View (cartoon, rainbow, N blue to C red):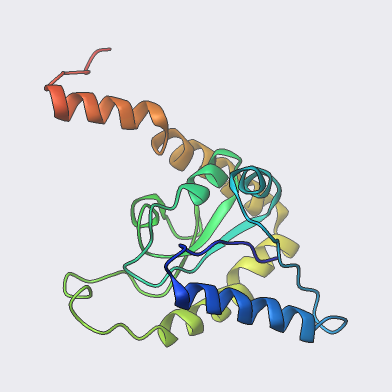
Length: 177
């Protein structure tokens, strides 16, 4: 299943979506592919409740915010994502989900990053970690779902955002509250 939306001025993103849609039609009958049209907040809400793994592959370091992945965590859905945006903080390998590619380095923003490393890691982890855990180790899968809620959902939420904002903007000490 593929869903997403490019920025109105992101011509490259629009071309990529068109390419994926075309491939889904060409592979019809051979590979089951669903392309979700008109991706919006309502559809995102349904998807973040009803999937088993949230795959997120932004071009680093361009992850906008990752709020869909955070919403998935609220529902016990593990993320399988490039280490960018919120996932750098939320990721604990084999506990809250899986990373795609290596951790970013201090100089990565200035240097060219080889996205082939992400592709290789994605396929390797799908084959050796994600799929075997899902199909062969139900207890581990459920334990990871529980960790995702306990660790990520408890930290990446509106309460923390408001507290952090108030503490930083107005020098309010929330300890003991």
